[in-house]
Image (cartoon, rainbow, N blue to C red):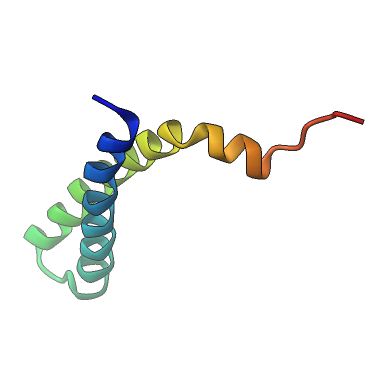
Length: 69
C-alpha cells in the first residue's frame, strides 16, 4: 500500500482516537470508560508512532539540522 494511501486512512483514525482520549479523560468516571481510555491510549501511541515513521522524511527536512556549511 502506498504511503499516502496509508496516511489517508491513519490520520482520521488518529483524530478520532485523540478526541476519544480527551472525552474519556474528562468524563470517564466509570470502570468501563477507564478501560476504554487505556485501550484507546495504547492504540493512539502505536498509530502515532506509525504516523511519525511514515512522515520521517518531512521531519528530517524541517526539524533536524544538516551540516552543509
